[in-house]
Length: 201
Image (cartoon, rainbow, N blue to C red; front, side):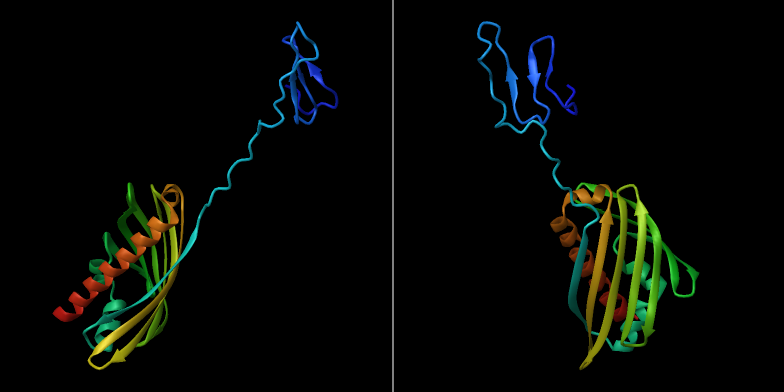
């Protein structure tokens, strides 16, 4: 329609467009002065700002009825982690405190297989360590970091965890609340499985 021009354009159907598109006048043959004013309508609406790759925080505490040394050993054992992480199919050592993981996960209707790496950092047995994960698959990608602090409480162990997660791709479209809810549910399942592991050993 020649919106970028410096003077009005008159087309064959006698549609006159002002240069700034603030008003469109439709000239009627029988009455040249009559026009329909479209200035109150948003002809070119601004696109909505989409939230992409949102960052989410997750934190909490979980009490496991087992000695701290046993709990810490289980938290850094790859075979134990494989059994405890929901959806984890494999966790193979690729370096010093570094592993390659394959797991099935999803949020709501978005599900798929992710492949990535898991790193254990800043190990301070039996009280503290950091976990760094990164993976991608059909539903998108996931990146995250977490800190675990273990405190001895009588004959039990209190685990305090804090983490930050970032997701992108199709999985990010389900919404931050659903992703956070799914992350908390997976954390609960992980610690429940971990408690069963340390009780059996």
